[in-house]
Length: 377
Image (cartoon, rainbow, N blue to C red; front, side, top):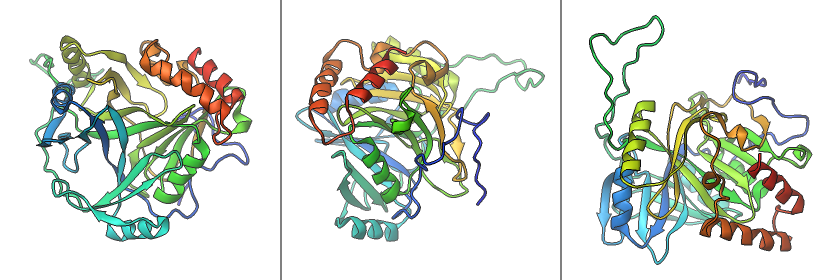
């Protein structure tokens, strides 16, 4: 296997220094193929469905206590919402390559293989990562057929002008979600949790970020992709960041192109929903992004034109700053950074104290100073 060590003009300013985290396990138990779906609980399934349709999901199943939301591409649902007393994220589901991998993982983690409900089909191994988050690894689910999508526009660029005697009029309508792209999670046990995903699910790191002045203490955020060998995978399927408590940060869903993303944003704005941050283009992953708050305040992202890497690319390393989150676009907002006054930022502030008082995590006073520096960078 040919390994790319340089990161000039690729995806990060520099590679690893001697002795730093390699970004992959030498002998993982299995290698998951993708992120299958995300699971939430909400008390109001009808309200969840109204926002979901405005955001661009289609409903693939709805019962009295469960809602499945999907994109246009074939496969599994992207999001499953179950009725609950309060709104919360309950965990991700990853797609195993086959039944044999599921059995291998079950044996290694001493967890049972159990059937999924008939609406999904297939089987799952349910475990907890070191942060306490429930993680499902699934296989054999009923495949959903493709739905009609939105075609990218034909553009006239430079000397290439394929569009003649035709105007551009993208419709102001929901940006149809094509598929689930990634989920971002925060954990106070970052290194232990990162290694758990690499060793058990075979994920590999695309990029590490570190607090400025604290690189010698190791990374504090990682963008992690599936290892499909020579077949390219999304730059990150899972991103993980150090913080004072374990929590969902955001999830991202692919749409057809920039015009679909922008027109879909205008539709959401007209419908009264809150844009959190956008439109811009990220650095790590390169996605064009647009972030919104759903009906219960969960942060969700439309994205398009993301990076795809095979397993030969080694991790990049870069300092973690708010200004380093985008190549272009408006500055990261207080809402996106989690420092806008409100219930969520208050809960995060309270968790600082509990994390600092506990020795059973990696979030200490030095890390707190680094995080506060990021928020004000």
